[in-house]
Image: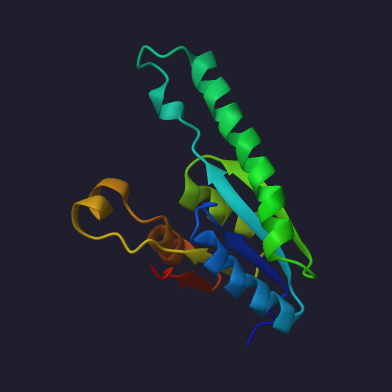
Length: 147
């Protein structure tokens, strides 16, 4: 089995992210691995041309990123005490950004949550976790948060 020294932990900064972080922190501690915690903010670039000025979209995304960076600092400090962990906010399509960052960082494993959407929600919103699992070159541990 390949040694796991770097874990990419993808979170959405919702209340369920704490459960995902628990798994990442526990594995990192047991394996003496580092953790890169990522959140992906939407780029909203698909809305340019919908009679919304591009600078308005850029400002909105900028506010999301600023808020997410502040939340990420608190999240990492609170959930990864004693672990070599850092947080990072990405911008774009979540599955694509998670896979790209895992590759760039040479991560050995991805840990992420899944919301377990079904029916029309799954058709409309898709599944970031499913796309990551299907396209990752490294192991992916998905956590379905309990209610």
